[in-house]
Image (cartoon, rainbow, N blue to C red; front, side, top):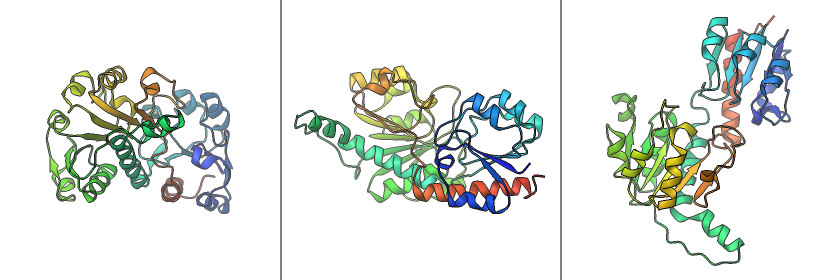
Length: 311
């Protein structure tokens, strides 16, 4: 059957010009939960007769893969595959394709916006005015500050360039980056340890995949400069939430900004309720420009994987 499952929230609600190519080729688009992240039951009910799947960040279990009797290709509208059971997919011979770097600029701009918000205490000032007060929290400027960028892939390199353009001193750390990748960015420093980075930086922004253990745990956070701003648009598991909460409570960390959560929508933990935690609802790649780019890339990848057959 020529049926394609569509589950990213940015694509499953309404229509999108990037998907029209699929319909023009005779594919039927299946949207089980328009605008909402599907559950395991939703996926199991929708997947059996679909040969292709444009997938978002929704968790996918091995039970869903077992129900995918006709599935040939999963095309992720992003680069991460943390939510996919890769062993089960490989065992079934189901191809997984990723839209690498298509939303990089949108995520990089959000990281910049979050750092600026933390440096200037924008949410605190706004909330204070709504409460009838006149708060005037002393901020700091990006220009002349030292910003640490952890992860120098497509997003991290863009982040470096944007902070350099604003006059910041930038330190990069990425244990997996090659010398060639470093050479593509000029006028910034690099360090070979995370500890060296956190001890020097006024703001730190994370752009690496999931780690087995948090990168920013109690030990690392205790070594940061007092009053630092931490931005996380990568993965929730990169920080230890209890340690981050303690750091906010003591003032060791001035502001924690996050666009990523263990579950979506998240449980409102004490960390997420803290007045100096800035929370956004996984909107890093949710710009018109990013969605257009990533949809084109995702559809291209899907059709390439299917070889425009799917009989």
